[in-house]
Amino acid sequence: MTTTERMTHTEILQRAEQLAAQIRQHTGEARLSFHPEFSRLLSRLRIEGVPVSRSFRQLDEELCEQEVESQFDNMPV
Image (cartoon, rainbow, N blue to C red; front, side, top):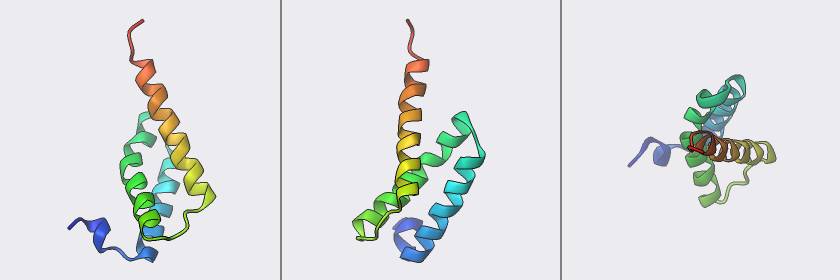
């Protein structure tokens, strides 16, 4: 059992808020380092039937787009 599986909805939301704040304070690869945990938290909320805020969804989408862009940046031409 992972730490996320033992967390309450309130704890998951609080952790997602903390991560969102950290993500917004960083740029580039540093932002992306938070994405796996942030994405897992949002997935857990969805699975549990807890509504995910628009700001969380938008931030997750930004990070996904940033990951795709970073993959193309490293692609040889």
